[in-house]
Image (cartoon, rainbow, N blue to C red; front, side, top):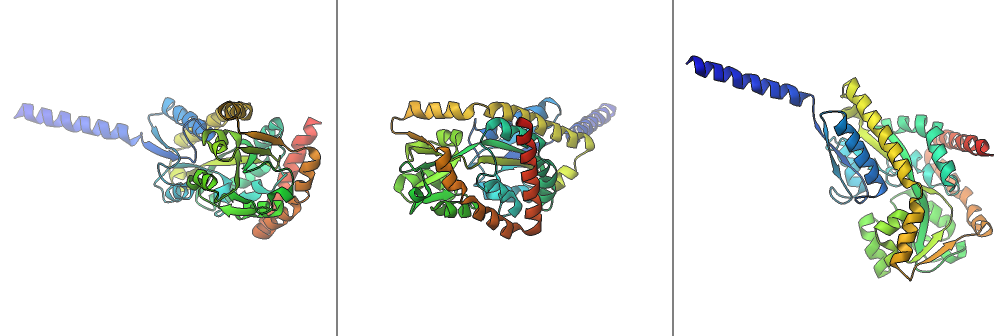
Length: 340
């Protein structure tokens, strides 16, 4: 009887010890929009490694398609099913209209060094955007660039006239549609999962994405004419469910922020030179690919159409959008003047 009591006490003690340990560890879930090895995945893996090396927590990464499209993973994050999500403003724009600022053409420079400095130092990105995301129950942890936007089409294009009657796939983003309207094309919203087939069957005539995504997604196979228009960079954001984040201990909040900072540094290092490497892989894989880099004169014909997109942005976002745009321009001026 005594032995039985001792055994029971020992069992209870072990159970309580186990409960105590598990109370301080958790398995968090993180979804992003890209494939294994792509830029968002590099960020996610670096974030996971930091979390797991510096705590008892574990992190499960879900890549493109595993939990649905971009809209699906955002909904799951807002509902608390996922703790972390990586989603570009191209999709978040419907939720946070001001995030569409990244789709005002020719607002951001295409020089890599300047872009990276801007993201590091921008007041708009580091101070204003977190407040906008918080209104939607999201804790913005990082915004970061992935690469210069490149258009692919069924033929080389060098002018707005060349875009006439071209159905260009866009993300479900009103301002991006406005951009391609301004460029002379017919913007065609389409989920990412349908883009390759749409290009293959002629439902769409072209699309835009960073060059690494064109390479990893095989888009050059069905849309072989690459056009460097110099109109912007693809930007993305990594965030947490705000209720989840605010429910963490101060120690875990700091852990998450430190992990996001670490992942940012790893990712910024990763993207440097990535465009050149991806283009080389595309050229090696296909003899049909053409590369068109617009001259300054050709770019000017597109740049002259940008003000109508900026005007549309202000109509969509009102005073807050105007304040953000003004700060954005001030931040850019500060960075570019430092380089002169």
